[in-house]
Length: 120
Ligand SMILES: [Zn+2]
Ligand SMILES: [Zn+2]
Image (cartoon, rainbow, N blue to C red; front, side, top):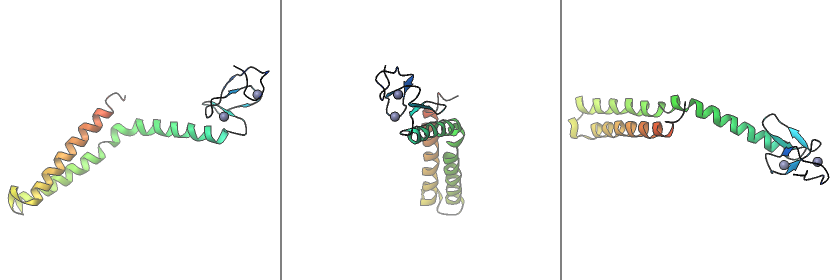
């Protein structure tokens, strides 16, 4: 492959943003990929940041996916307990709402866990 800007020069790599061939003079090495010097440096910098951020979010996800289900489970137990002991029993709205929250907590936990089953 030849450099996009200098047809007589061999490319040493491609820009991560526009995929054009770049020679040593046109390429700017940003650590995790090359960018067109003075043209796509900011874009490639942003792409690297997004990729790194996603990797961190993904690594933390197995712990973070518990927050929602646990919250809804506690809310469900609270409503169900209140409905059962104070309001009109298991046919009254608070108990049924609590039951719905508990079901939602279980379903969302199972679904998010399936999503991250392959995560280390
Ligand atoms: Zn470029
Ligand atoms: Zn060049």
